[in-house]
Amino acid sequence: MRLSVPFFFLLWVQALTLKNLNYSVPEEQGPGTVIGNIANDAGYGTMERGKKSNFRVLENSAPHLVDVDPESGLIFTKQRIDRETLCRRNPKCQLSMEVFANDKEICMIKIDIQDINDNSPSFPSDHVNIDISENAAAGTRFPLTIAHDSDSGENGIKTYQVTRDDYNTFSLDLKVRGDGTIYPELVVQRPLDREDQSHHTLLLTAIDGGEYPRSGSMQINIRVTDSNDNSPVFEKSSYVIEILENSPAGKILIDLNATDQDEGSNGQVVYSFTGYASERIQDCFPLTQILA
Ligand SMILES: [Ca+2]
Ligand SMILES: [Ca+2]
Ligand SMILES: [Ca+2]
Ligand SMILES: [Ca+2]
Image 1 (tube, protein in one colour):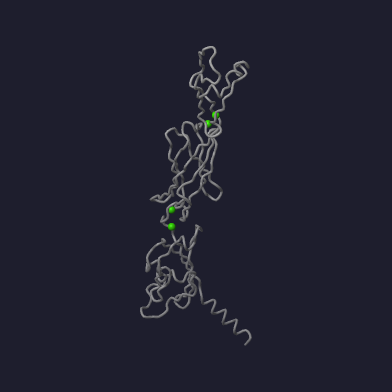
Image 2: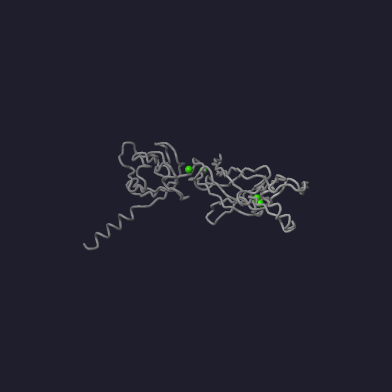
């Protein structure tokens, strides 16, 4: 008697056979979409109508997403399946079920949820501000914000593009990390000149690899910051002043003006005589009195 229980258990286990069935269904299909038919695919033929529970679900990894008709063996969706909600960034998205079929077999069912390109790349902000010194050398790089696309594989981000300005001052270079993520970098191609153009506006666009590609964009606002690359310039290179002798002290002789195109303190002009002017002249005509 001690051997009887394991013996019958062994017979019961031997009576059960396992069948593996694999299916796939695109995401976003409506409720009632037929994924497959266990009766046909497992070779049972047409099941007896009216017979209850030819197919009984033993385990269902997502019980509200798919189900099996107990009489016909049809596998169908119970509701719309969003691959991105179900599996997030995992490229492999699979549901599993165990179905007790025909009172003697267990069908191990795998259902791949196929991605469709239903998400566009998007940036965390609609714009980014970048300050670049006007003395930045050609070849200087600036990493840019990456976009996000919830789809997987080819439906994820495939490339980036940037609008070209009139003089091709900037270009885009793409770096691909080990996990396949693409990182865009802005590259200075030509010398900048704040005094010529102090702002540049570019449009960065991320494009996915779907059959019908989707895209998202972000504006890049570049402010060229100043360096002290201009000297003050007078309107003329030399001035000749005629003055009557015995002119009174304090008489204004000429109105001088020098300008510097640089910004802020780099463009502020301070006047002084250099050592070329004799001390006598400097004593007679302090610069502040020469200027209006
Ligand atoms: Ca996409
Ligand atoms: Ca998708
Ligand atoms: Ca200057
Ligand atoms: Ca400057």
